[in-house]
Image (cartoon, rainbow, N blue to C red; front, top):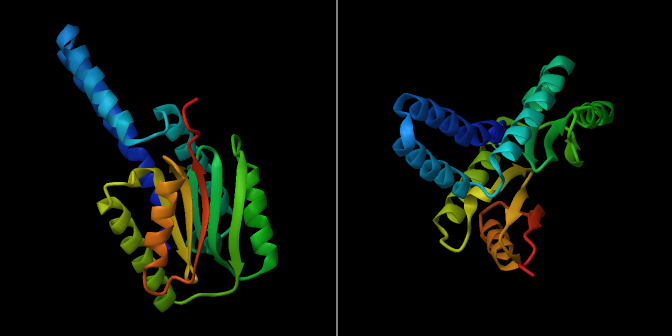
Length: 203
């Protein structure tokens, strides 16, 4: 399972934008502004979501983590969190139904959460399973990144118990079908569950 992946991924464009602002202040003038506009456009082009949405998703994920940390070690170690456009995907293992219900409640307590996809399992796992899950996620990430017909940056992936969970934004149904096909072709994958939103076709 890829834990805390959204945080590093979400912060990257934000940090780039912050660094860009410093450069613009240093350079000043129209030339600096022109460079800044082009660079910012490039950053936004990498992510379908506007920067303010990326920032909000990052904040939501961070607040959920804080809630889980305060609830106890098992919550933060065993729960994977992905946030896309205010929609939260929870995956992983918790020892009891009571803990599972509490994790969901703590997630809903965070402001700006629009939906919670509860894929938490009641039970235990082990290093072998975690290693295999991480390998599956890495394989799928690599495969869709190398596929020129897929805008891979718009997808977040979690793997638990042989099931691959997807969340993000697909350009169209054909692209999403390619991602799902890549997942199903990976060894040890038993099921694929998608919470990916498909973009509406232009009117």
